[in-house]
Length: 191
Image (cartoon, rainbow, N blue to C red):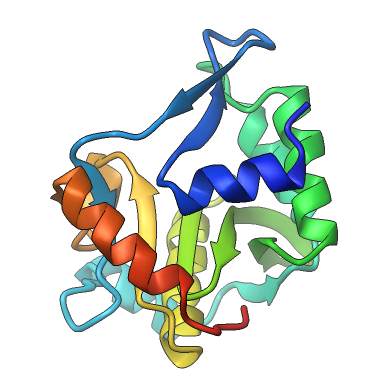
């Protein structure tokens, strides 16, 4: 069982769990290099997304549909690393205040979002989904705004992807990541 204590200790050490090969078995990972999204002026909003944000098409909420978001993230046609045990464990982390979601809605219907874990001034992005164009991207932009407003200093995305690279995500060596992580988790930030 992935207890809150085990999960939080792992995150504090730069380690995170994933179900392996779409099975219930849990693997533990600490990539080198590690991908992060800068929370300073290097965070980049692509031009097309800037236009979408100006249209204000989506309503954005925080922590109003955590379980729905994680379940949507788990239902991908190409498979997922999010097992039932992961869902249950992260819902527990949410109930005790360490896991959070950002939801994007269109006409009051959940159409995108993301979820992750927060400890101190670090946010560990876990997964995102969209059912409408730009819905998950809007959630990410709103997450970054919230983290900046509350003094967070680290947004961990685990691995680099082309999707995250367009926002300025960068890879850093694990040793640098762990140094930044130690500093971040010592901060008294509230999500």
